[in-house]
Image 1 (tube, rainbow, N blue to C red):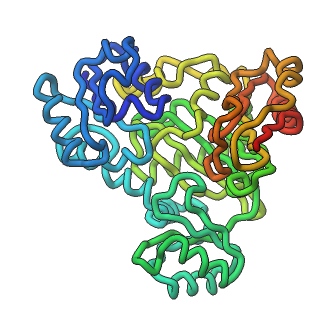
Image 2 (image 1 turned 45 degrees about the vertical axis):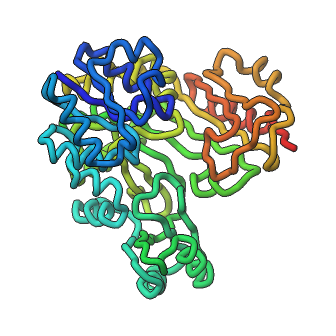
Length: 406
């Protein structure tokens, strides 16, 4: 088996996927925008082959690199785990007849309106939505559906580029910000009231063999807009209880509807007065280090599990469900540079045995904007056998630790 992995050097957690692949005993090659020296020697020295290209999303360059790698051994799998690389990898797979996620599935997992159309056709509940190319189409959708609405790029990840609008004036401003008048097509959809979270799987041959359910506190759109909030992402260890049966059923239905085969998946969902609703899905792992939370919560190596799924189409590891795990983002009180931290020693004394890790950029470091996301500034990651106790501890961290900037 010869597996080619796209961009093992950046971001840094890509090295974990490469490490997992190397643990399987298969021949592992890599294509990167960076030189081999960007990898630690224990990974670099165990590669079968290495190719450097100007850009891994340049499909011609990617295909030519694959052809060179295939001269020594036929390529059985070509894998990408970064959202921006998924479509290029799919196109090259089809061009070179390599097994894996198809370009149709990759497109359905990137283009929000097409994705929603496909899941609706399969009978899966989701928000009303449409593809709009001009202001008139957006205004007609608003008149039919009512406010509030969400406007976002077709291929946006998470809350990136997302606008919540409450009236005609805010809609016009969002369309201007998203450059619709300049010819950009966007997605517009009904705003759903309720709680949101995500459901992640490692799927093999179209079936989830490992899965996880997580919750946002508060909802992600609010978290990405409000400085004073210390937002949390929390993975439950109660997924095997009956409370998640409907969510797991929906996840399988979406995977089937979109033709996802052997791949990680990351599916956003809403639960509220209108019931459980599908939001969107990617055929790749979640971001912001969530797989590290899964590993810590379950005393296993999810990166190796993924690699075995790719190489062997079976997974010899299962999650223990011993812990719930979560992270809390700690925002600076203003933009500028980090001055000092308050409350870290108290948190360490109280919760030391439950802390997975802490990131605190050094005083003098430039702060990052709220829109930078959950890991842009300081954060604390924790685990505990009881979900409610973990939530309480994370709340205490948010109330106690202060990031002071100047």
